[in-house]
Image (cartoon, rainbow, N blue to C red):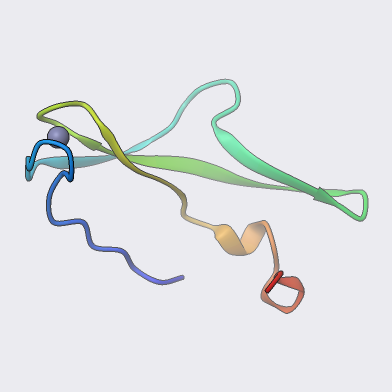
Length: 72
Ligand SMILES: [Zn+2]
């Protein structure tokens, strides 16, 4: 997985960004294919100054699609 470096909030310019687990009842991405359901937990990068969610991402995208079946 490629690393994404976020230096500052694109909304307010704040530099204090917190990475946190998105914990809601549906705080995960799931993909169903060939009767197999794959799940990856969602994480969010939140600006501590304005509260904007700068990025929403999964740390284990390979859980959703193994590389050999990845869609182009
Ligand atoms: Zn901000």
